[in-house]
Image (cartoon, rainbow, N blue to C red; front, top):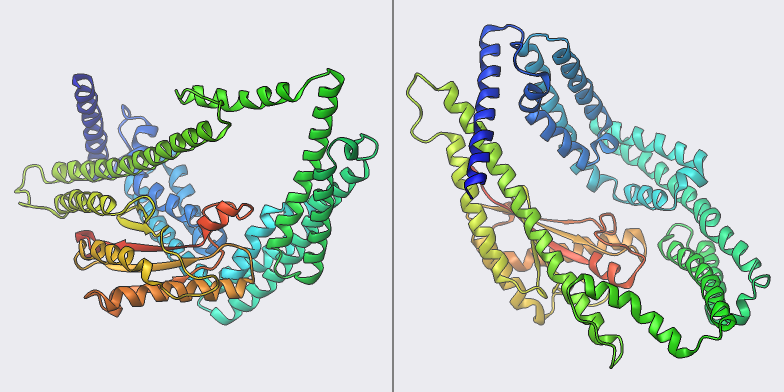
Length: 502
């Protein structure tokens, strides 16, 4: 504890020293004093610009808002160059301030792109996933050009032209994806199947080999019949490729066992070893006297516990990082006020108090849900309630009575944040038509919105419902569990903060 306090004290002194140096240089309009390194100054000077840049890049602004992002990066790099050349601090700060505004503008523009180009964005992701840039380079390049044009049109406010170009890009991405699926998965799978007789695969792994062939046939059928909805075809083609390789592995392993006169007992004992190694790493005692079930369940429970722990630690780290940034800014503010009467309670001090209160509210909300009902996450100041326990009938948006209790808890969570605004976000997995998935996600988000409004005092101006369809997966759509995770509704609470009105 003593060492931690000493470390924090030293860090505090360094921060104050950096801020004081920058303040002096700014006040005199001179070059930075020689005993402060460029890197030390850059860390503090570029802090806001780096945050704005990171937010823009996380929102893919380089793709969705290339015009504003490009102008922001140009100013950012000019500021870096000016700092290295020792130019005046006030000129550098001016460029950084302007870049911050442009980064934020770009970030805001991505939100409009999300709802304007959902299908073309999904098509782009699908094409990327199949490595279309490698297997269908010409079509990919044409699609990228069209999509960039669409994004620029949207930044300029021409929504109709933007949508038209985005639709053209979507068709190009889909064709590129088809070509990539055929080249990357089906062609290589057919080649493997053609070699099966040479390696006696049919003799040693006939069932797996047959499954691979069936999957190839199904994938080809899907590609021919549903060429604009490639998710199922892509999944089948990938699985066919996997099963073909799996068949070769099984055949090789079984042949080796026979050559060594190994028995079924040898096989069973060998299959226990991987689970045994994993269990031992988790400090569990494996037992296989009743099969694999017990040890498997213990390992899964162990992983679940540590995944939750990692999420909690990550959220705590974000809290502390934000707290540190606010306190650093407060130090700078107090330095600037030195020699004059400081405000009794500054805006920064209020932000710090608000943050502490929001964290307490977040903890209370998190405790109110079980792991089977919801996952409570935090992103910036926002509280995200991921409703894992909310289930809809297949292809419908009707809230069933069994979900009323869960949504009552959501209402109570919202009430814990007075004057907040709320976003209800709907998502689907990738199977099915893009248009139908988008419509279904909107309908489900709106159903939750209407339920919340009907059972609370929140008004229409405080809550919005947005459907994203299949465009923002959080897990792989290639597995049953992944698709189940992607079919979700998130309720995002945006707390009212003092900084919003400054």
